[in-house]
Image 1 (tube, rainbow, N blue to C red):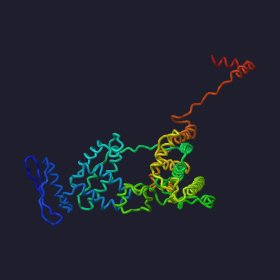
Image 2 (cartoon, rainbow, N blue to C red):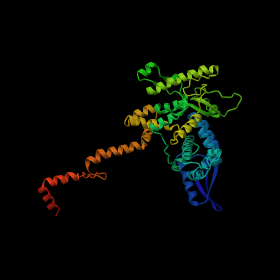
Image 3 (cartoon, rainbow, N blue to C red):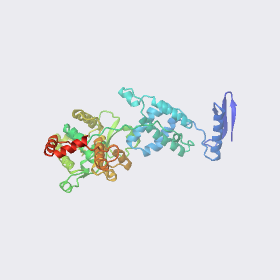
Image 4 (cartoon, rainbow, N blue to C red):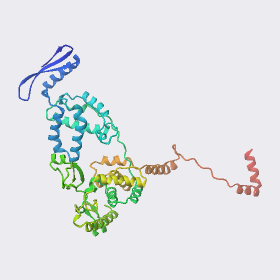
Amino acid sequence: MASIQKRNKKYAVVYTYEDSQGNRKQKWEAFDSYNEARMRKSEVESQKDKNIFIPPSSQTMNEFLDLFIDLYGVKKWSMSTYEKTVRDFDNYVRPILGNMALQDITPLVIEKYYRDLQNMDSAVNKIHKTKRKVTTGTIKTINKHLKCAFGMAVKWDLIAKNPFSSVEPPKHVYKKREIWTSDMIIQALEHCTDPKLAIAIHLSFACSLRLGEVLGLRWKDVAISDNDIANDDAHIFVTCELEQVSTNALKVLNDKDVIFTFPPRSPHRSYQTATVLKKPKTLALMLRDWKEEQEKYKEYFGCEYTDYDLVVCFEDGRQCSHSVIRSQLKEVTKAAGLPSVVFHSFRHSSTTYKLKLNHGDIKATQGDTGHSQADMITEVYSHILDEDRKVNAQKFDETFYKNSGVGVDQQTVKPQEVDVDSLVNALKSNPDLMSQLIDALK
């Protein structure tokens, strides 16, 4: 089946196999120690006995990743996932592992790879000229995709087992994002001078929308008629979202899931990205006012108005990008003197606020926010605002410890204040009481 032969200071495991064309070939694998060679010999013999032996292959990681992206990624990934995953492979996987043979990727190689990756400069920060290493969050994402890729390699009989199943990536501690309370949001809106940003904040907070969903919302998906408002049935339909994606991803994925691609601002320039379009009564009235404002803009701009039917857009109808809203939010945050937040935090604030209103009805909140899993809601519920925790503690203290008279929070009885003048007058009017008091104090 297999044998071990010593060559100089090395130990070689020698065995025969049939290649993909059915030709019989001999393979020599060299190891530094006899124990390593013996373990490999046992592994080869065991795999052959179980008919799971994979013939040696010179296919490199670069070649395999190309195959994986073509056969799996194009079919399974969304535009944004395709773009980010390919970028991560190009920046962090190919430079280190790209030239290695696929079958040479072992758990030990992966452990060393993750160690080296943590000492590597982040590709993003090469652009921004800031010194920052690859984060554990990025490594966790890379591990997820490579584990999936090697799982497909096992399925395609390219390797015998998935080495990533035996390796844990560096522990990633999620940093809790700052969120605003409802009072903070009101304060921010008071400092907001741009109506499209105000509408975007209202939509995200009241309807638990993501920024892409806010910017992709069209008037035909908004129900704010007189009957809708009178019957408390004003609502929106989330049918698409606005994304900025690379033109290469659009081409490779053949416009997958794309409803509409906005034309470039300048038809004479070559662009690497393209923009695509992939409930309360008070808000309904705001939307109606905003729609009336848009009608005035349409009349003002005339034929120069580009009507995409978007709720949140520029005065001339052009689509509003994510970066514009984020930039305006930073300005409002600074003007209002509030903690810095990302736009997605309004969705978290909305979820938290609704959980408070419905007393923790997770299922109802899940249906409103559109989270795919209830545990996503419980994660948000876990960071209910600190002032609410203080109120809960105070209520608990007042209702339990005050009545039970036990525990560390047991309240001591405060002595009643004595009215000295009344006591003196009582003693003067009753000499016997004075005598009893003197006797008691002896």
